[in-house]
Amino acid sequence: MAEQQNQEKQNKEQSNVVYVGKKPTMNYVLAVVTLFNNGQSEVVIKARGKAISKAADVKEIVRNKFMADVKEKGVKIYSEDMTNEDGSKSKISAIEIVLSK
Image 1 (tube, one colour):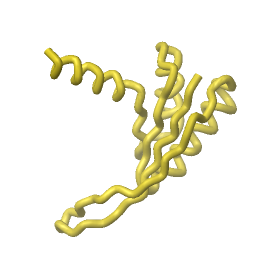
Image 2: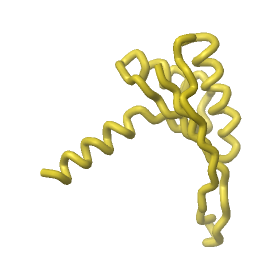
Image 3: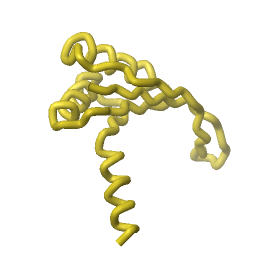
């Protein structure tokens, strides 16, 4: 029973995260706006590597063009260890931008 509640809590936390990647910027803007319109009070934009600048663009477009009442609650910048295809390890930069209504 406790395990099921923990899983539900984890799913709820993940439901407000937008992972930025190779798709067009407006796809991620739409995802963030949709989450806010569906009742989320907080949305996290996550990106790694080259997508970090796109994540910043997503935040700015959401705030300046679509939802002026959204505030930037915090930004976390860090490095993640990645295993390459050849088995070697490297570090890759990552960012989390927390937006709240």
